[in-house]
Image 1 (tube, rainbow, N blue to C red):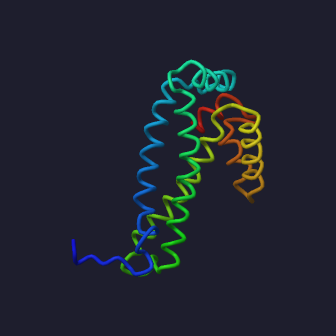
Image 2: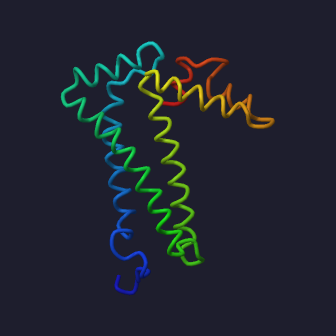
Length: 165
């Protein structure tokens, strides 16, 4: 273990961003599993099930708050790790695979945070679906097809929610 050297620019707090991201991902997985046990992924019942989780499940409001804030912190932490790696040459030959994995994790984390924000069935999440699908629809050639694929038809509904979930 002593043969592995940490680059000078990564010593201190930036060196621990990966471990923090891993911890936050574990928190997200655990709280997400707890929330999904009570979540109903239908357009009619999604919002009511989230309200039920907050009001009726023991510590449901705490679990939901930790999950929501944890997602925000995870996105910030992963992108801070990407920035730290970019500034210290983490993309160079000897660490290129780690760099690619980190960038992939950044995009997966963004995707998960976005889709998770759409699940509560609130006005904000409906607006998010409309904005995302409208943006997809503007892509040349494949846009209309991607929009229909994400929506599960021509308008958002239960199929959209199930595909996102």
